[in-house]
Length: 516
Image (cartoon, rainbow, N blue to C red; front, side):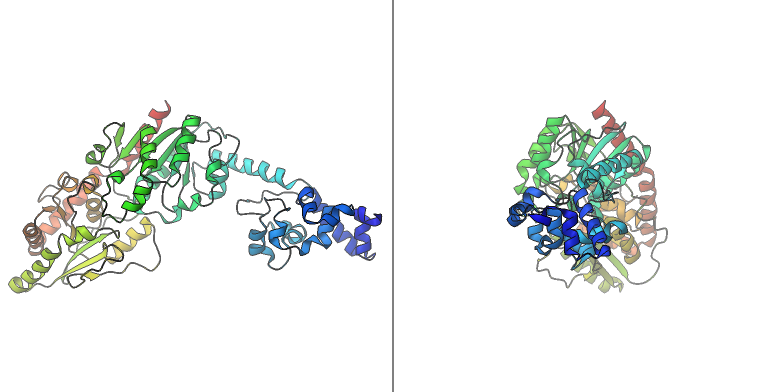
């Protein structure tokens, strides 16, 4: 065997007696060994000659294993050290292991995407250091951060084998949207009230969005009781697993929705996706402790459940009420919505076409109709009766979108058509709230969702038939004072009756009721 079984002698021979090289390579060897970066058993499987010649794997790696492909190295390098991550972010063509122990550690390089500089020493086991300091980091976050969205904390937390106990109510929140790009529903219903409720210091909220799901080991979540309460909004791809884990650990469950998802019609663009997970949604609802909804009509969709109505509200942190009203330029009607409203818009197509001709022929008034979104992607739509306002090229979350919308639209009148379907009967008056804050008087479909809050002609107008849509819009076009009074009254109504504070209080009540 000779010198090959003696690390220092091996290094000296390989370094040809060069003291500087000997010292440098000895330091690399000690660091790799003390960090326990290489599994001897797995290394011998790849390099059987190393075992036969009784060469210490860390020494063999320095001179031979370093030339292995990364997919080979992955079989014996500590799995916490993410070779691909490290090479991409730091070492490039250099070997990740040698780069880390010679330079990267001293530059505070991270060893994987979950690392928050958990490795403090080169002479202690890497695994022990990582998990010890990760635990300390999570405990620190729990003490000082009451609204946790950082995936480096939230994902190790939900996958941990050890329960983190606190003196606060721990709430796990699951939304089917990327947290970094929240749509209106999760922003209004979940993010805004929970982030403000966290200021009370009574809760630790952990928020998981679609961008978290792809990084989580779903089968390994909630091995212990990490949450006191779980809130699920609308749909999740792993509801069955979550239900089973919550039942196992006695975690209270809340189902939050602003739509009757189980009542989505077959011709809806959302039907196929919802239908695939229908049984999972039903299972979660059957097992949950409370359902939260936006309206009394939606509450009636859950006759056998404890239901709490938390109405939508004016999100005052997103954009301010527009105090001014349009004074000049052509009369402009406007509509905005997600790309699922083709049927709603087609309800007023003939009305808009006839109205534009009527106003021009009888009053010499040009009328424009502008649409943002609205039509389903792929629909072949006759665009002759409206003008399109293109959305910005980059996707925006709700906060950015509403800010953009406020600056972009210059409408005299907003129109809100809604098909009279069972699904739409569960909708909320969110469009009324938003149009009011935008300073735009509106004409709304005469359905419960709107006729329960719009009182003609105080804070809006209602329409059902083609003739009613024409007459109501015409009335607003010809009477500027009516537009102004509706606008002013709607703003007053929203400020007085659609404050977020009452919604926060309801969530606080729900959580305390579930725990106590």
